[in-house]
Image (cartoon, rainbow, N blue to C red):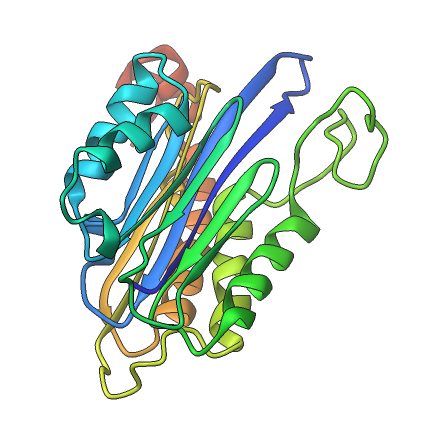
Length: 254
């Protein structure tokens, strides 16, 4: 199941409230990857791929939501999985990361584990795909730290950043440009991005959960879908924001 990235960010809203957000982006040369690989909540993010076992993603996220550390949760599931040598499983929570590539995954396969994100892939053209994805995200990452509060990726009240979903799609694009999935004989592809955070919204941003299930140009189509979702979100807020805040259609004329 091609390549994916899981990330964790901390940030502050303009009122000074601290928040956590998590995201997964994934693409593959098969249809419907968004139904199989990405699992996200306001407590963590998990991606399951290669010989996919959806239970690893679903149950892994449930364990994280119950308070188990990501490494403990995913290691426990792999230890009980007879198919572990053919799996790839990686993820993040608020305190750590975990990445696993079974020795029987198909090459090129591998993963990269950094402080606040993980990248993994299999059946790729080479390691450059993973590195390009990781580097593209790292260059745009947001993560507030006590020892680098004014660094290039720090969150401050006057810092403007792209939404995480947009930055994750851009990271996929970087990996895709390096060759991506090597199975060029498979024309039908897919891509997905999912983001969750502890921040409350009157209207949940639709660009935080997008899928392109069957196309020959998954990254370009996901980018276009994101742009349309963003435009629609802005238009909807402009017309219905008062109604959402009041939870009443009486606050709008249409």
